[in-house]
Image (cartoon, rainbow, N blue to C red):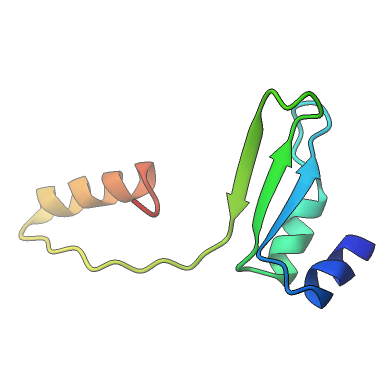
Length: 83
């Protein structure tokens, strides 16, 4: 719980956590629930890999002219949510 308090106290933009195995730290969801603009880096202890999590609202207007373009835009949005 201390990391939750320190994240708020310092108004952190990012937090770095250590990964344990292939699982993401359970703390990530708690941090993002309290601080939705936070960026979280989960780093493997041997510094071989890292993952990044962000929870950001994103709105984009997409022009569509017909059903096929709508389906294409929907598929693209699912593949690349903030692209």
